[in-house]
Length: 102
Image (cartoon, rainbow, N blue to C red):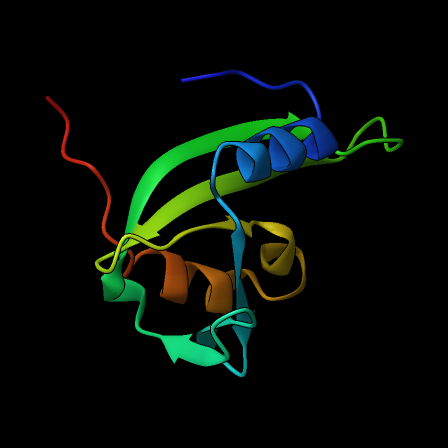
């Protein structure tokens, strides 16, 4: 899995590698604007995760998550929402499927 230094680098590279959709949290639900629909968090599989610095903000860091749906739709979600509603973010994120440790 690639490693990234900055938020922009991670997002741009992951988009180039096929994570073309965006998953956001709206009204305590997971939403994909490109598909124009709400997605159950249990339908997302975490493929990769990167902890990076926010461009231009020396002390700010975020996570960029790469997810795949059961229908093989690849997309991104970031931890930006967690800044505003940590409990809401954690409630959604913990319901997403994570890979099992080998």
